[in-house]
Amino acid sequence: MSVARCGCKENRPLTAGRSCCSCNLNSQKITKDSFKVPAPPASRPLTTKVNFSDNKEQVTTTESQVKNEDKKKSWSLSDFDLGRPLGKGKFGNVYLAREKESHYVVALKVLFKSQILDSEIEHQVRREVEIQCRLRHPNILRMYGYFHDEKRIYLILEYAKHGSLYKLLKERERFDEKTVAIYIRDLCKALVYCHTKKVIHRDIKPENLLVGHNWELKIADFGWSVHSPSSRRMTLCGTLDYLSPEMVEGKPHSYAVDIWSLGVLCYELLVGIPPFDAKDSHQTYKKIRYVIIKYPDFVSEKARDLMGKLLVINPDQRLPLSHVLQHPWITENAPEGVVPPAFNAEKK
Ligand code: AMP
Image (cartoon, rainbow, N blue to C red):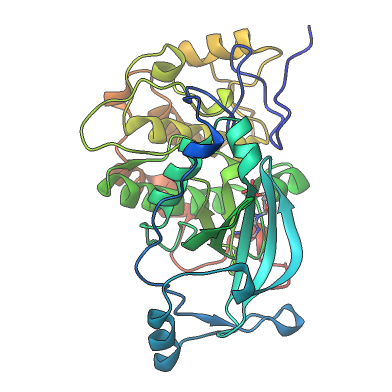
């Protein structure tokens, strides 16, 4: 039996015939006239200058630059020189760009309003902008600002030199344990930060992780994230492979869904395929609900121990993120300040 897959870049199995991920679940119908983007942030905090001649990036900050930036309050396309395309998403393209005044290099994500409206994801884009603009963490992709014209929305993003983790994983099939431990540790720190800001990401997976200049991980794409001051959410969202049992069963869910997806990610990075991968979505559901996991022989005992403590049916019994950072598999494999071994030999 062939598995229905989403037509988006991820090509993952569809969730019970519905869209897989960055698509149109639970959205309200809106009209073109109702389209609004949130008010721009008060300042433009581009405080780091990057020189990208010859593709060599050099990071410097000057006081006058900071002052100049504070003067300007809003952006337009004429502020940027556009460079090569960095990638193609479902709703638009991402380009390398350079701010004309500061020469600061960014990634400019260009979204078409008509496609956003047709796919009924206006609320997702709005949420992504509102949340991502306010987060500041070395392992979270910065969104410096945004602007729009009649047809498009432009998101001004931190440039992640090595692109998507998904692409790197497909090139290498799987990563060694030290590389994965470093990425899980960094992701864990970024999620601790998100959770203290009361943000649940809800869609952690390789496609939503980018890799920066020093091979560091950056969470991108907050399209499915929620700001959750108190309530426990019931929305079904995210990619099937990464959905937690409580989400699969349509139960209320909270911060622990990100702990579950950390476990799924750890497995996929180590093994090359997600743990609940199956020939059809029904089988994947079943595997998730009963947490049926098979570890290949090459996965170490300590890695299995950590994943076993993250992939727990009861969300309240999943290992808290602060304990993940203390787990022996992390402390022994992920020393601070080193480049993940998988990329040691790569040219910067
Ligand atoms: P997206 O539409 O966000 O899924 O992006 C499509 C592709 O563009 C990604 O898979 C990346 O390869 C690339 N891309 C997106 N954002 C960035 C960024 N900030 N820096 C570098 N590449 C990016």
